[in-house]
Image (cartoon, rainbow, N blue to C red; front, side, top):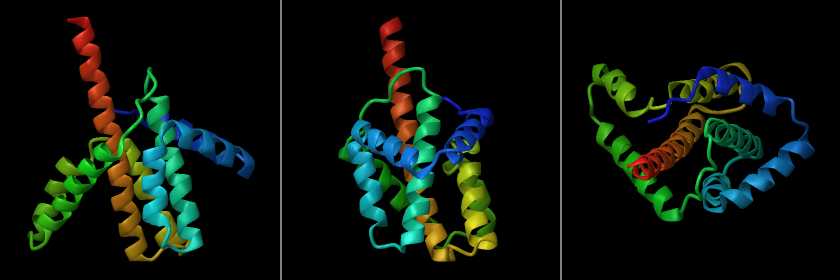
Length: 173
């Protein structure tokens, strides 16, 4: 697994925060062409949310995607619905299996299961907490929902990175 540095996360976040609406729309459209299934996944899972939640989700999604793109020397392969569904079901099962688990085990499980990319997850958590506690634009339910969606996105990209690494190692042998 390739660990994305905090520097890449911060630089990408700062770069995108400087974009105007037209630039974000243009770049998001280009990303949608590169990753249509992943973009559809996000659009599908946010369509029933409030407009402010949708806008935040798309902005954060785009930022996360750009973080992964900038951290890769090679173009990330197009991610398929099957790959998305596999990761989604894995995470759904993880959440279901956590029901009834004693609180003291949550932190241990979270460290192992949720933080393959700690600096990306830090960006996600800080942004969601800010929107929930400071800006009051998200309910706790919306925050949890978006966190779950973004965990899937991070895991999907992580899986793509692992496949890229595996393919590179095969070429070397």
